[in-house]
Amino acid sequence: MSTLNSVQRKNTAKNILYFMPDCPTAFKAGNITHSLKVLHYLNETAITNTVDFLSLSDWGTWSEESINKFHTLFPNINLILLNRKIDKKKHPIKSILFYKIPNFIIKLFKKKSIDISNPFLNNKVTKLFNSKVYDNIIISYATWSSFVDNINYKSHLILDSHDFITAQSKHKTNKIGHLFQSEMKAARKFDEIWTFSIEEKYIFEQFTKSKVTYLPFCFHKKEITPLQKIYKYEVLYVASINPHNYNSMQWFISEVLPLLSKDIRIHVVGKIGETIEEHPNIIIHGMVEDLQEYYDNARITICPMLSGTGVKIKVLESLNNNIPVVTNTRGVDGLVQKKNNGCLVTEDAQEFASSIKKLLSDDLFYVDMVKQAHNYITDNHNLDNEIQFYKQKFS
Image (cartoon, rainbow, N blue to C red; front, side, top):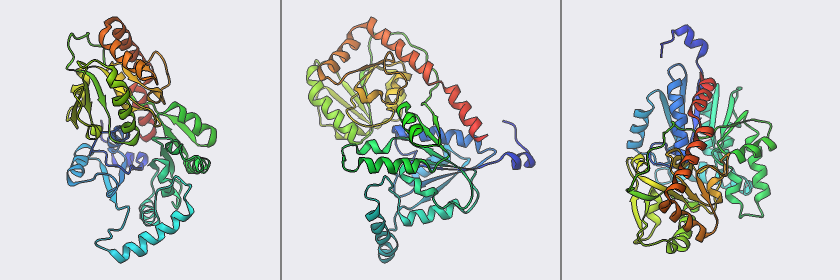
């Protein structure tokens, strides 16, 4: 890329701030995968732009190692870490006066709100945002929308929604209406909303006047490889720890696994393995350095998913690797195409087990499902479109 002279840079440069509460370099999860891609594009534009990345040091798993890794991966981005709380061990009185009491008072008034910020943090963020003029401010999750309440200049505000927060509390029937109103009020603060779920795009378009941009998760195109005689990891399950993954995997273990023959092994990758008890049909690999090695040697993947919202990145990653997926209805949430996409979808444990067995034993059926996965990703998750979007947005 050619170097711009100082006059050209002055005319084209932007100040951009991107907020994500989690540490993007500490572990792998769907939301982290997305943030890493955004950071990658921002790092490239930082040759001409000034890019700040804001995160919470006492929210995500930030450490000296993860900080160093961040600087290595994104050398052109300025990392800013703020504390969400006042350390009560170091400053007990200050913690009570300036964090606990104000936070308690605020919580009394926002019991039915999606907002999870607090006055102590909001004051620090406001000072940061007003310390210079940011042309673009990108906030991850509507739960942190109060960050933009007191900016003293006009900035193009972008909500990187990640998820539809209200749906996470659908069991709270006495609060659901208030939570929905709170989320829509938060979303309306932004000029633009990003979502990678087609269902969430519809919701935001109906209840806000913001520009809603559908950003499907995109990939480098991978060609279909010949059918292997033996797969090192016949059945692969990749997942992080959260209540949805935990409950869904417990359902799979209790309802589906007994219906499979003893020679079928389920290979589990990710932190979810820490929650699974020892079982002869389950092999726990834990956190791995090279996830691609597992995809390269897997015949199928499973994604038990009884609850949850938004696109399941692990489903898309599997399809991108031309690997069929056996999942539940929640596993294909957010996908543009619900059928003929490489996924076998069922709520029934018997059918779930039968789908696994058919994909493992019927080569003709398996090859057809592989082609479906390949065609779905090619048609709907084209990386060239994603690259073009970020170039136009921040160049």
